[in-house]
Length: 85
Image 1 (tube, rainbow, N blue to C red):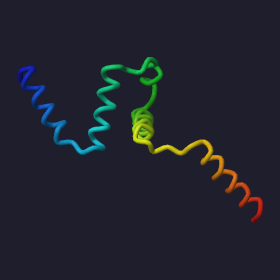
Image 2 (tube, one colour):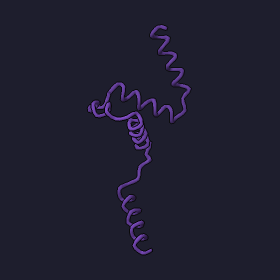
Image 3 (cartoon, rainbow, N blue to C red):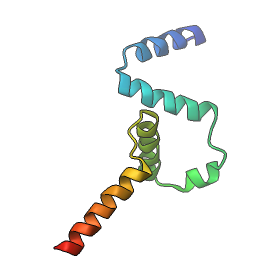
Image 4 (spheres, one colour):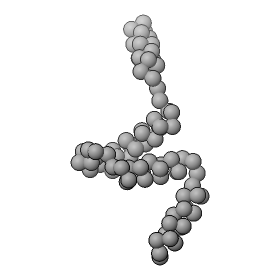
């Protein structure tokens, strides 16, 4: 398969992806082109740990975050409820 044919096939495959899969692929390509500076640490992680980090980054980039203030508010509520009961 020529380079042009390979690029066309990849383009067609990418074009058929849903939003979530496209975001995952974008992240993978970003890391492939510009790998993290501490690749030694990354390489020492298990595949499951690496995937967990990649998933967390995707969620953060998609805006699925909880502010520090909200976490502290929930923690205080739980502590206060535990003390009162």
